[in-house]
Amino acid sequence: MLLSEMKENQTARIVHVGGNGALRRRILEMGILKGSEVYVEKYAPLKDPMELIVKGYHVSLRVEEAARISVDNVK
Image (cartoon, rainbow, N blue to C red; front, side, top):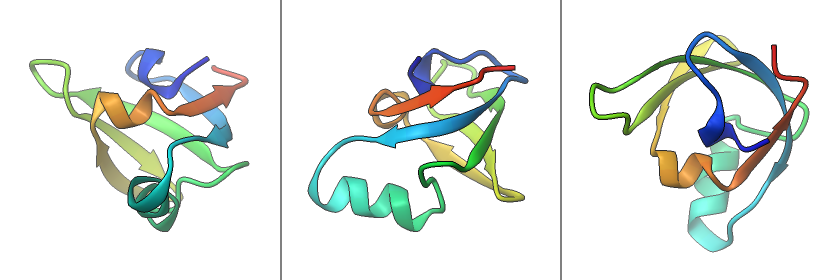
């Protein structure tokens, strides 16, 4: 499943971070790493961006960027 397909208040574990170059590096620097647990806090009113909680801090990510991240064990 892709991170962009998750609903609000769901938790999952990151399996793969796709993309290339600067975008992928920026995502990894934000702590969105393979094996990390991510919680979807909420979506903006127009469904873009989405607010995540990763390692105890809040991160906003565009849905287009979240579509490059695969997750597993969605709860």
